[in-house]
Length: 166
Image (tube, rainbow, N blue to C red):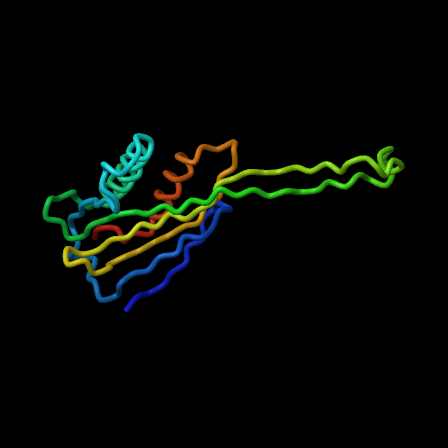
């Protein structure tokens, strides 16, 4: 059976949502390995670099929580990122007291904001492929912040929810 927990984090981009398989005894999990959802050869150079950063962040967080990397792991961890390029437009109407109000042919100010929104999903499966844990978080990135830094921070926020080694 799976349990669902919501953890509110200080970022406005969303909540961390976690699914835990209650049939799994996390006290017996000591080792982990990382898995890729796509072979490295199918990724562009930039995607390979980002993949290495994401897997490295997951590895560091697992080691920080007391788990050891292994070639015969108790759990395999992987991630998925879904991105969507979006934009939002706002029309700023002139004040009735401004000079533009008296010129009905003037254009209104239209401001367009472009951003990337998406979700990061990190999951852990046992060697037989059974889902042990899964966690996700939505995010939104504007032009002033790098997508890479937001993804790294999102993974860190997700990994806080992974049960620490006892």
